[in-house]
View 1 (cartoon, rainbow, N blue to C red):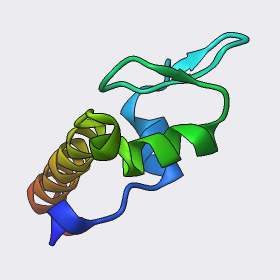
View 2: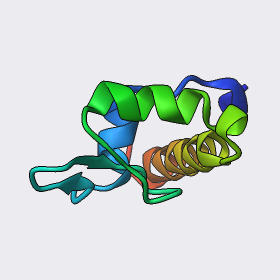
View 3: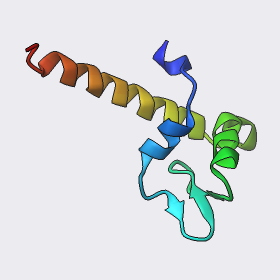
View 4: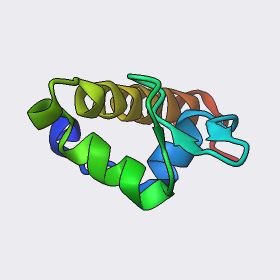
Length: 80
């Protein structure tokens, strides 16, 4: 189910706080292409396989890893 989760703008921004390329736009952390807007980066990620890239797979896997890490942290934290 996590593999099918959609990638949100929040996920993209969380992938790298330094992905903003000054005066150029936003950089895809998978293929390193630069896009003028966050929206255009999100569209690129959604349709990356049609363009010959695997960026959607990269961001989905990253999101799955974050979710797993978050669950592990919740399980390890004391239940006050």
